[in-house]
Picture 1 (tube, rainbow, N blue to C red):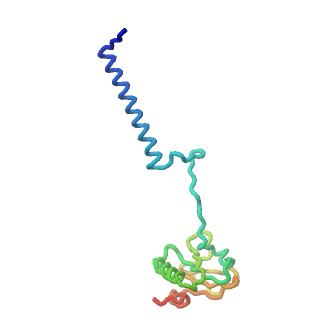
Picture 2: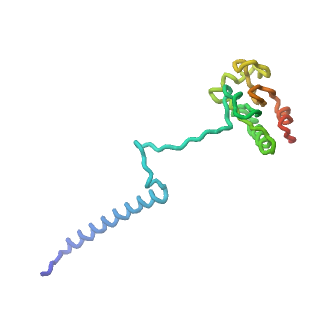
Length: 169
């Protein structure tokens, strides 16, 4: 018993196979890009959110905790991110930290909201002598040397800071 298919049936059959073939190709491309391009095929999303692992920068301090670092002796370089000389300050600090016997240098960002009250205003000068943190006022650039939890040097001039850090140029 032979089945005879009409010309219309043959065309419908071709069309169905063509559509199924295109669907399989599109699904294959989708999974290929998820697996090899975006690499998120096997990652599970919780509630539609993806999470990024955080990190803590140990070199940054806030003014309230600057005197209780774990080292016995260290420096704190306080400056504003808006200062035009910021890259110059960073080069000086980087050169110093590359030295063999360099003390630890912490950065204190005066633009941080927690440090705003310790920043000297436009007409105000930096306080080189203070008995508590409430009296502390930091200028554009300040290098503070701390030993045993007490401030031993308070330098606001960049050239004096360079000589303190034994930077020649």
